[in-house]
Image (cartoon, rainbow, N blue to C red; front, side, top):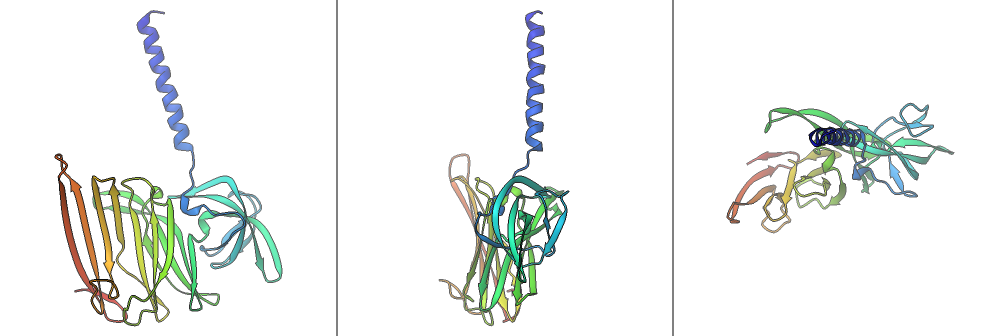
Length: 285
């Protein structure tokens, strides 16, 4: 075999090996960080009628179903991962109590709460409920979006729930769910803040504020923050009445952007708008 033929053969072999590994990579399933739950810790069910299975896979027999807010104990994180839409999560072996009976089984991690809180006799649950197709205004194409939700529960009854976008899988590395004060907004009992974020530069984080008043949840406009080292950033925040620069019966949206040009000069943009709060709803001033 002459040198050129050998070179051509090696090139073909190299391409085949590359294709094989890229196909393997495409077939690999990863779990999202927000669904990483610790063993020997309690968690709560987010998705109603969550199926409990005999083994950690979707073909296994269903042994039970669990309702929203059911507490479970994580016994073991299984190696097996299932990806549904843009959500990827491990299977977990759990134990739970119904009445006097304690049972065990396997549930998919995507059915569990990403975070939960209890305050003033209410349970607040934060989870990711589904993936939907949404048309991108920027690129005029259909993109997959994760939908998150927050539910408020009194006793065993869901009394209200709100839903909002949380981006794609790479934006689900970690999440937080916190309860803040009422921010001196009229009639607001407390403010919930749900956040999901990616770990890499250029991956957005989404912050969702939700006001809780008269047993109702009111979702505020979503805040997006993204940055790429010291080359670019885009930040959004709210100034509430109890914050420095806040005004009564309103919250102020503030955006700041910075981008460096070819000569490393910073170009900054600012914008702000005010939303009036009347004690039950908000509107742009």
